[in-house]
Amino acid sequence: MHTSISKDRNRIDISSSLIIGDQSLKARRFVTSVADASNETGRLEQSWLSDRWNGIRRPYSAKDVVRLRGTIRPEYTLARIGAEKFERLLADEAYIPTLGALTGAQAVQMVQAGLKAIYMSGWQVAADANLSGQTYPDQSLYPSNSVPNLVKRINQAFQRADQIQYLSGKGKIDWFAPIIADAEAGFGGPLNAFELMKAMIEAGASGVHFEDQLASEKKCGHLGGKVLVPTHQFIRTLVAARLAADVMGVPTYLVARTDAVGAKLLSSDADPRDLPYTTGERTAEGYYRLKPGLQAAIARGISYAPYADLVWCETATPDLNEARRFAEGIHRVYPGKLLAYNCSPSFNWEKHLDPHIIRSFQRDLASMGYKFQFVTLAGFHSLSVSMFELARQYAVEGMSAYVRVQGKEFEAEKEGYAAVKHQAFVGTEYFDEVSTVISSGTSSTMAMDESTETAQFKEQTAVVTPPIRGSEHDHDKSQQN
Image 1 (cartoon, rainbow, N blue to C red):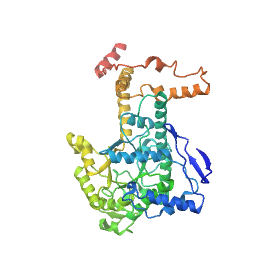
Image 2: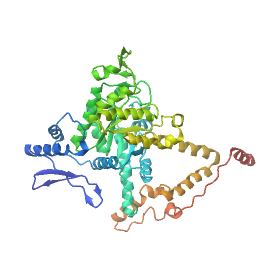
Image 3: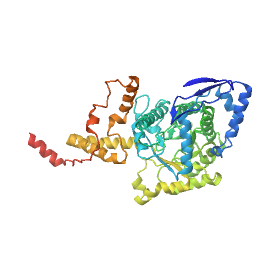
Image 4: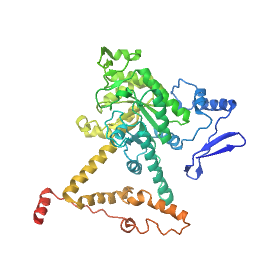
């Protein structure tokens, strides 16, 4: 970043060094006096009248936001641009289908293949991408900055792909797909949610979702033992997250998730809105027992709707009738409210739905208002099953098994797949260009010129090696003995 002093306005400006296309990002203006603060407050109040904030309730003032900003407000370029892209997608697309990415490489493949947004699952971070280096279940056991760290990692993978494309002058892919990230139950109270939302925005998230479970007892939506917080307590979480985005000056999308369909426990009976769904019983821990179900979820969704951009109801099965009833319940009070749906790998899809229903499932959801739809754990499952299959076949066949993978890569090149040329894919040519610029064209240590990849990986025709059947493999081994 760099700072400069505006002579005519006597304000400190700051801008990101990131270049988008041919224009550097314009510097932001910041307040240094009471008069400037008043002007900033007025501009913010005016911005809240735009269509972007239609139906959004803020129980605080623009003056509150400006007072919390300080005199210098950095430009969070990726988060802002991503949120603006997500807004256009919500307006232009029938629905936005996404997959959960576990690594930067996976996210790049998703965008290369045509997906327009990325989902980032806390479950996947817990399982295999958290900063503690542990394998965890989805119970908020990992460090709370782990998801922002993966958001940053994926955005940096997008940045490298963008640099490679721009340098080559080939391709028109918009690599910086909006990332919608999982903040779980906020890892604590409203202040934790406030700080976590800030960390997500700093990392470049376009949207963030929170769920109405008790953070200290948080569970995956498809596990038992879930404890909900009172409705008003979760609203405070949403308000904290919105305030964080406003203080940082980014129109981040906020998704409110309720687990009331399956949760059977409540941390407190302090909110009258929750009382119709309590049983009057207590557990050994002091929690109140709940009557879970769709009506409880609808009631909570209605309460959350004014404070969130999208509402998500976690479900136990892929049930279109249930989805329709939830949508109708929300839209009866808040017509047109945007909804989100988890097309979860926890569902045994073929057990519940016929193939023709599965094919039209997402279009049917879209017709009900579910604009953002995601397969949370797609990265984990696709990575696991593909590696298992390769390893199982490789253990029997050796290199023939791997050559079939390479053949699939050659074939996929016709559709835009680029990772078969793995040296170029990760930016070797880009850094060769950096070396060229540094040395004024005299470098003798260029990496790609005499690389194996340059010599061998031109346009390829896939040659598929047939698998060796178990009996053939046994016969080969017997001939060697």
